[in-house]
Image 1 (spheres, helix red, strand yellow):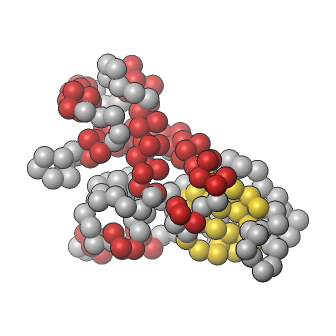
Image 2: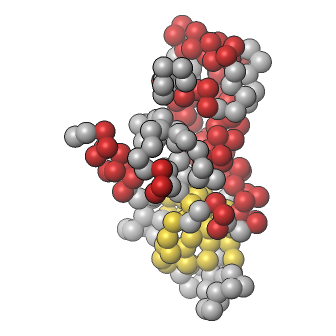
Length: 205
């Protein structure tokens, strides 16, 4: 199967779990029906979702909920995918925390990004797209991972001198991608207008 076909298969896969980034017991002020809704961040593809809740259900910010079709305990219906601009102010304020929850719950996957990331173009490495990664940091990461693969975020911090918090660099990059106007998408499900643009390691791990 060609790479485009694989990309589309990845794009069509659904989130199974999501982190609550806002909970509105009475719905939005602009809604005609006052039904409880939640805004969510998917834990596999960082998809931003809006959902309605089952009767008598309530949520807390940062809670992980089932959103897969078969195992929903609190979520009634996924209204659809939303954009960053459609997030409530509260959801935007909680987004970084939720992203970090996802990263640390899947720490081996993201450590593997530091171990396996490669070139996007002849001159640009995927690592260089992380905020705060300059040429010296890039060289140090590559040299260290060739000597021995990183085992954890703490291991990266210990072995790469003066590198900012490696998990936080990922948080910043993922938040940027969620805004939807990046040229390359390393981690986030790209917006529809970016489907034909090249991107990094989305879906590879």
